[in-house]
Length: 309
Length: 309
Image: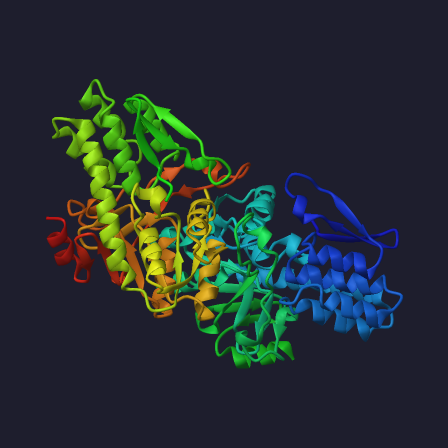
């Protein structure tokens, strides 16, 4: 289980995920600015992992208010950033808080992975998008943890891994994690999922989330929404796995979630391009939201309010 | 209007589309085997263009039966290959036949482009997938021709160009063609279309086709089917533009269309991968099929039978 973060020598060390799987290089962060840069440039990514990175970043701050501002604004879509920074501002010892959040994340992942695994049918051929494994959380992973637990319980036959353009977190990170865990998998282009579902080759979709609104709308890596629409058409359950820290009861619906637009050069060189990093899946397409506080079911307004309390 | 093919010095010259847009390099083909290799390796691609290439390939044959076999099997999904080879086998002068088919394609593209343009709303923001422009047909293009005609008639505001993984025919070829024509466009990742439709930024989808079954099911570049499903959800018309030579009344439905599986290395290096080149869009999701014989509407079993006669 490769971890995205570690604290050592009074610094935060970030596994540079941009260079995986070719190389395991660690970046040393000595200041909140270093951490914000690592988040912004995607050296560390995944909603829970960037929340933890921000918490550690707060432990590197001399001016905590300025650090909070910097870290909160590093990326706009994941709510875990604001959540972790908010928790840190209320703490006496930011480092102890970061370490506690990290431990809580590990425990949350363990719990939600076990609960999520039970949602998969025996011999499941699952499809996932982007990376929601250990690299994305600092624990077992969310969607990735569910797949790992299902594999360990003998319920998982195979994983279809969306390559996840433009930065290929699926092909680079998820495939690498699944390979290390010995789980049978194949990488596909993001637009192959429809054809595979139509052929009857997909039993379940499991994805992570960057922010879940009060009504159950889910912001996640761009391409998640098309999967949910296709899954509905083919009667395939679409599950979202996320810790409670990803629930955002203060945001009424997906329409109010800010969607990060990244540099067009990540998509196309030489042509004009639009690079939306996320999309919103409406709650009606979500079969369940698997959290460490339980498996949330519709109506989500109620189940999310109860879990986020 | 860049053309994919030309006949010169008793040889077929193929514009090597694998090297576009960086470089305009022409491959000389002196034998049916050379042409089959150019088709197989995607130096020339697009259903109508590979049909024409095969027709010219027949004109290079000493043994026409062997050449027919070789060219027909170069790629499995597009019906235009078998159609063009079949026409050539019945011709006295294969070169004259190839040139006539080429001229017919130009005329078909011109006609269907004009008819298709009228289907677009004023100020349309269109979305297209892969490349169905001049490079794909040897004429104006099918879907690309429709966009070009709509632009000339002042009906088109903007084109969203799916980059079209794994070989990026949208980002490399369609964006290049639109740029040369001065048509405003932006490249997006294939999985961005859902989010754009949900935001209300797409008015119409226009794509080409590699084979259209007797019932109206459409085989086209993988990723077409998800677009059709998303378009239906958002009430966006989904049009297919294709010459009559792409209609295949002998194939009852999409289930019987062979779907090419290409080398996994086109998708992922180092991980296991599945590389389906096409998918099938069921006729129920297709608003119209624009051909040179008219705009076909449901019920397609009837309109296709009439057009293909």
